[in-house]
Image (cartoon, rainbow over all chains, first blue to last red):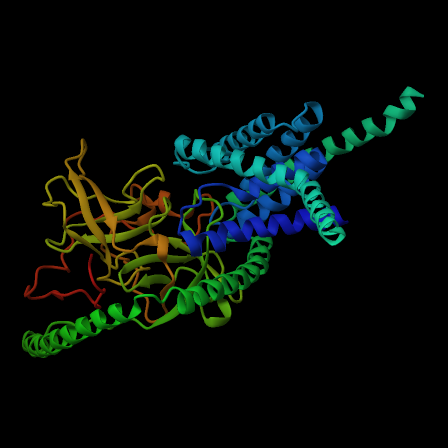
Amino acid sequence: MTRLLSVGAALLAALMLQTVVGYQLFGRLIAMDLVLVVVVGTAIFFGPTAGLVAGTVAGLCQDALSGGVLGVAGLAKTLAGFVAGVVATQFIVSGIIPRGVVFFAMTWLHGVCFLGLYAMIERHGIGRPWRQILVQSLLNALVGVVATQAIERGPEWWRRRQYTRRHEGRRRLAR
Amino acid sequence: MLTNDRGPVLEFQKRTGYLLVAALLGHLLLISAQVSSQTGASVLETTMFGALSRVQALTSWVTQGITGAWGNYVALRGHRARADALQLQLDRLGVQLQHATAQARRTEQLERLLQLQRTELPATMAARVIAADPAAAFRTVTIDKGASDGVRRDMAVLSPLGVVGRVIDEPAAHAAKVQLIIDRNAGAGGVIERNGAGGVVVGASADTDLPLRMEYVSNLADVTPGDLVMTSGLDGIYPRGFVLGRVERAERGSGLYRLIAIRPSVDFSSLDTVLLVTGPQPARPDAGTAPASNAPGAGAREGRGEASGGASPTVAPPQTQAAPVGPAGTVGAPSVPATPAGPVP
């Protein structure tokens, strides 16, 4: 239940950061897909089922808020979440580089799926913004790696810091 | 023992597979339901948009509160010099206003003398932009006014600098989606202000530097960089005489039409407050123009592509140069834009 709530909160926060805070603070400068980062992160931590459920929910929310067809981003994110989860269970992706590769590859998978579906649905499609996807995948990989490392190692680092402080305090008192 | 151990794992993997297939099938059904639908947005989408837009509004309120507090209390250094400069500018503008008022009075007298038709300033309602599109492929924004405020689908959205876009989909109670004019599926009837050459202004694809282009302008028409492009009102969505942008590039096309790239007058990255046209909508062109559905390019300009068959400015490309907006002083046509469209960049 805690996991479900934390993933839900992370998705909502990513969606709001992407749509409201990013727009109001920076205009359209945010080129990354924070929602996808959360979906892939969920898949890495909790496996393919969690990844695909998170992808479905996040994608549908994203579709509902955007001007596109409902279900396209949902399908692309579902696939990305599921594949990321399968990759995370089959390979060791705890290192920085493998994890970055997963985020990078999932952004491409998502992009190709999204553009492909629109090419089938619409007469003109979205075009081929490969350069934008490249930039987005690099940024997603960077943010994803930093965020997942922080989630994994953050609590341990915090405990150590607290312990060191307490220890130093005792030393001072002893003097 | 091994099978007992592996049993639950296999069962779990099988369940995940079923779940994936179900999710993908669900998405495909959802997409196909919308593609064949003629009624517009689905109930699921409207409900989700309504619920999420409230969260967006709350987040926007918090963000604006923080940025407002920063701007009002922290970043006020040097405001005195700026206030003095603005006062000076205000004084100058006061003089200019007196001059403009006198000129307007004279123009009014001349118009009365020539019995020119006057067009009304459309009634508007202000709305605040609370969020942008989460998927950068589309260019839409969410505003904080919805159906309960009287917002309807296809209402034109303007800003003091020019045309912003139109309301797409059914609005939620307190929020609505606005398709920006630079979206690749957006379109509006446009005319070159200098000579009245008419065409269709459409959003360009995301990978181009100029987000607007004008189509169906004859190769014979005189269009040069720097020309102002205004709305023609022929699309039935946007009132006539509002600024769309300036021509940045105009080249001779290989076919019948020129290739015209336009720089929009509105800075879409810093939209804050917009105006919805609530007053009389421009009449849709009926007789005398080519049917929109038969017009080349018209079908591709719909809110969700041709999938929804939805409401969008279906603009018929003009057969000849549009007449009404002409150079100042032309008898028989309003010589000025219908409403002051604000400062032109």
